[in-house]
Every structure is written in C-alpha cells, then in structure tokens.
Length: 396
Ligand SMILES: *Cc1c(COP(=O)(O)O)cnc(C)c1O
Image (cartoon, rainbow, N blue to C red; front, side, top):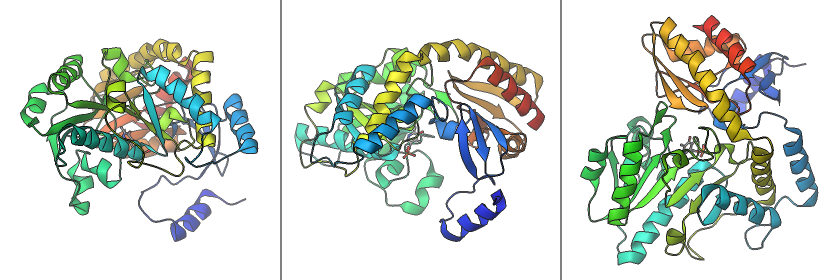
C-alpha cells in the first residue's frame, strides 16, 4: 500500500502547482466522514467546499448515477435528453424563476450571467459598453469574465486587462452602490452571502434596497448562490429568506453534490430579452449524467427534509460556536447563516488552526484571510457538531 507522501510526490511531478494542498490523499467517504489512503478518518466540515450537501456515498444518489451511466452519459446540446429536462423543471420550481442554462462549473455560470446582462442591455439600446456593478471582497470564479467581477485585486492583478466596464461597490452599503450607477449600468452582481471573502451575509436592508434600485432603473440583479444556495442557509436559496428574487441566479457547488455542474437561471423578463440561438453554448452543459445527479439531489432534499434539518441543527451549531467566541480571546466573532458559518480569528493564523485540525482528524477551511470557515454536509447531527467542537478546541 502506498502512503500519503508517495502519492503526493507523484502528484507534484505532473500536477501544475496552483494549490498549496493539505498533505493528505483522500480516497473514500461515508456520510460526513472521509478517509485517506492510509486509512485515517476525518470528520468533514468542509464538504469539498460546500459541495457534498448530502454526505458521501449516499446510496440512492450513487445508484442513480450508476444507472444513468448504463443508459447514456453524453448527447451534446444538439439533441434533447430526459435528465436535463427533469433537472431544469426542479430547478425552476425551486428558484421560482423561469429558464435554465446548465454549465459545468460555477465560473461558467457567472460567464453566462454576464453575457445575459450584456445582451439584455444591447437589445435595449444597441450599445455594447454596458457597465456591471460588483462588490468588493466578492468571489465569482477564476475565468476571465468571472475574475473581472471578483473584488479581490490580488487575484486580478497578474491577468489584466480584464473585461471592461466593471465598477466596484461596498457590500452592505447601499449608498456605495448608488454612487456607482450610471446611465450605462446594466447589472448588479453579488453573492447573497459572501463566501470566500469571509462569510458576510447581506443585510436585509441592503439586499432589498438593491432590488428596489434595480427595479427603478431597469438594471438586472444577478445573485450568485453558488456557495450559499441549495439549502445551505436553511432556505433552498439564501435570497428566499430575504423575500428577494433576482433576475438571474447562478448555482453550482451543491447543485450536483459532487458531479461537476452549474447553472444560470433567468426570470421570464430576462429570458425573453437576452440569449437566443447562436449567443451561447457548451458541449457538456446539460449532460445527462450531471443532470441525473441534479434531479436526484432535488428528490433527496424533499424525501429527507433537508431544509427542515438545516433549520433545526443551525441554532445548535451557532450556540456551540458562540461558546467558543466567549471562551477564547482570539476568536472575536461568529458570522454566518445556517450551515455556512465563520469564526473570526485575531492574532492567531487561521492556517495554523486548520492544519492542527487536520492532524486531529477534522477538515475545516479558511475564508478571507482570518476566518475559519465551516460549511459541513447538510446532514450533520448534533453529535457531529459536538465532535467537531471537541476536535476544534484541541486545535486552538
Ligand atoms: C466556488 C464559487 C464560484 C466558482 O465556482 P467554480 O465551480 O469553482 O468555478 C463562484 N461563486 C461563488 C460564490 C463560489 O463560492
């Protein structure tokens, strides 16, 4: 049997070094637990970055994928396939929006949303230099369009020039959004709960205020629910708990619970006045295997009452995390919504804690430099929370 170290050495020979990875090689998972190639067990409060909502090796989910593999894996978008339609019906119902375009990732969903906004504006007045307002400390992905609306100079700098016409405002500051609006503004894009930037939920006043502003000026509101959507905050999509509907929503991460898939979803108004045949495409998007996963994920959410479970377990997790805030001087705050929580660390490098936790058999991640991020599978129990707290305290 090869050990972690041997696999890591082999990987470093052939994998481009774009990540400073943790020094473990994960092999399999069961429920909320992962196992490395040496058989060591980890309690997983990272879920593959908010992906594995239903936990690992869910029997019904796995069975569906195996059956789909035996039928058909790929058709291209030149033809229809059944899982694509079923998945889209469920996504339309869950979002309350109207039309779906499936992608292979979050960043591609953002690219699509940007093109929708530009086309919508183009059809309105034929001008192609339309502006998009994005937020500081946002994260929307790594492709050049998504990077252009990602408010992190460190990620952007080496890749300039990015796409033009992007203006940045301050998240949760309505006046700063107003200040960036011009007669050319075609869209505002933001996460409902900022993830990578440090777990900042939008305030109600801000999100509802931006919605109102967009309505008044016929500006599209694009909400990125890639990380905070799919039940993570206790409603199917985080914006629903604010009573706010976007014109365009982006989804990915837990949408397929491990199969690479994303989507941008449009309301009727936007769908009727944006992309038409020839404007956008993808070879894999809407792939039957990925869509069988999406479709099954929605079924399991219903059958297993995942939203109710998240609502029920959240206060327990919050209480336990708040106890840590009270107990440790260097933990200065807790922020978050549902099972998307962050602990703010001052004067203790979050990377050290994360590494220590790994040694102690707990997977957690960081966000925004000094935030310890907890985005566990949505199926965690109170017992899992207790075990997490115990392992985390050992690591502090
Ligand atoms: C992860 C993430 C993305 C990018 O998704 P990828 O699938 O990694 O391309 C975009 N927006 C948000 C909010 C994310 O968390």
